[in-house]
Image (cartoon, rainbow, N blue to C red; front, side, top):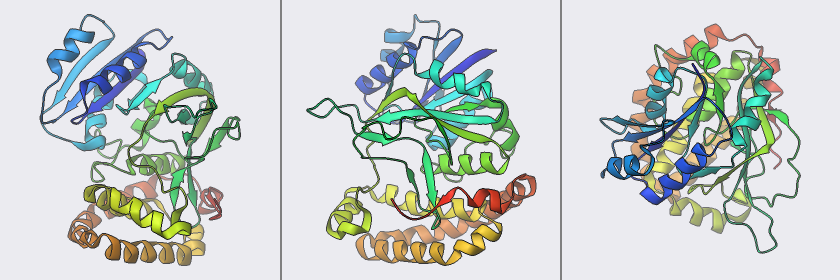
Length: 340
């Protein structure tokens, strides 16, 4: 069994981007690991180029799906067959530093830790040499607004202490495979395939916490991530910029973002903390939906899809809630106040 298996799912990304990400993954100062590139139904084929560039490295493997299975399906098939103690689903627009995996893996000496990630930075430094943070672990407000801690802030060391976080971003998170086996749906649904892409990592983090596991942020491990869809820096406080940001996103991204975030709450939230915060949740969700109906009215096209998925999500909720080991009060401590 390998110690670590890394998987990069490709969907139409350029070869030059993949080449940088794969090479950085292969540069890990770690023994007994492999790097897999999973082709996920792209409109073109880079197999020949990839095998020419990396095919002689015994740590590299090429895999192929017959169709676009989304982030969730693409990584699920890899995890199910990885035969590794730990797995790292890796975005193709990332570059790991050589010590990343070794540094993050050290935190798993604590058996309660099921998932961990390092500090994510934007790849280009500022003129003064400082970097912009891309994320330092996932947080969730009392209104159940999920986001990356510190995203778009200048890194001045304010997140340079290791800590438990609500969840980790699947951009470059390492997961303990045995923990994923504990909370999966069916035979091999670790990430929820009904979500396809966007917020599948929030759902997975929530399920791990409900099962009693910890998620950890490790600031000494650095990964560079370009990320095409960030949070809006100032939210509704600058409504003009927020509208421009929303309109800059593809319609499908907006639809997935709204649909999946709400389905994740429905699937995982429960108990007294939910009842306590329900007014905040309702106000936020209704406000966001009304805003999207005005700015991106095509969001209405998502409603039939939402209601089609809802019965399956409710069946999964029954499984999740039936197997949880933590109380609502324990979960409630993770729902921070809305201050940012």
